[in-house]
Length: 125
Image 1 (spheres, helix red, strand yellow):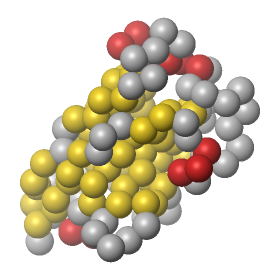
Image 2: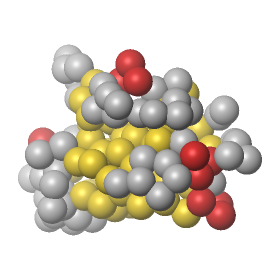
Image 3: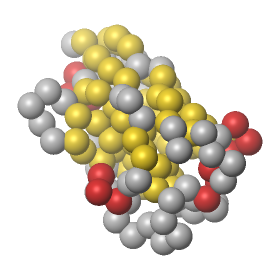
């Protein structure tokens, strides 16, 4: 499975961006899709995830209420709508896919089988 992420850019604090990630699989709806981010010198952190087959969405506390993950299964795409962006949201954002029948550790990068190339998000103060 190949993942292609897009939508990053430079935005002022308080602004919005929408990231998109398209997957090359016919069974996209079954995959748990996640977004992670990595700032310079820091570990890759969980941001949000959407379980496959109509499952729930999950968010890191730091983005809850500001970010929304949603998917378009017909287009094999998962989006991350980011509102009220803060300078601390600056990072490279990665999308990831997990093809496990049961995804139990979706907040951990080790759970995911496939990764996109990353897209830079920079929030200026």
